[in-house]
Length: 264
Image (cartoon, rainbow, N blue to C red):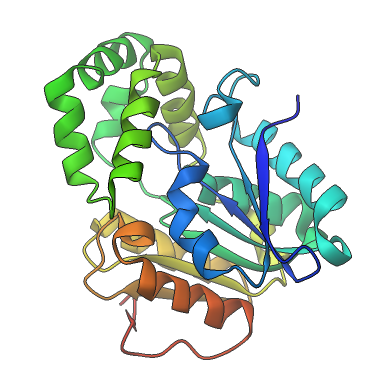
């Protein structure tokens, strides 16, 4: 199973791999990052059942890890890449670090949940996901969701609407079922030496903020920060700030305090 990907920027420069979130997102969510990092070799895949990989197998964290590892091995300059994963993609990064950390030069784990939230009891059921997929495909609900996501331009809104129109109950169940069963962080993270930034928005939920602490406490060379005034949408709604944070981290530079606050 080979997933769809695009390569942008300078093909001879250090490689960055961008791994998108699940459900209503795909590689297009990184457009503002791809534009900014034009001097880097950017690889932007679509995970299975998303974007142009919509028909490329069933999504699972293990499948995604294998695909991303193979992409880095075959396409990354010097056989290593900085990797950025958001939400579902952050779970992929965590498992990539525990299984193939030799492929990663720097890691950014963005909005990775490791604490339970109430919706998980509802979501871990095929029947509930069938109802949820039906509700999300209704036009008014779709419009409300897109408005909530605070996209920076119409192309984002169009692409999100298309992703939602393709939602199936099976896809939703697979994504949320894995979230429910992969909340516990692997102890192997204690052996990871990769410089790792763990990040979330300052306005995100307390379980999300606590998750940063959980991850930082496991990875020896990790730093946890919150994007000032950021909600869950910060990679695109605050892309200028997020891009600077990413650039600082992958170049081993200090992140300016005006952009981030401490987790505690």
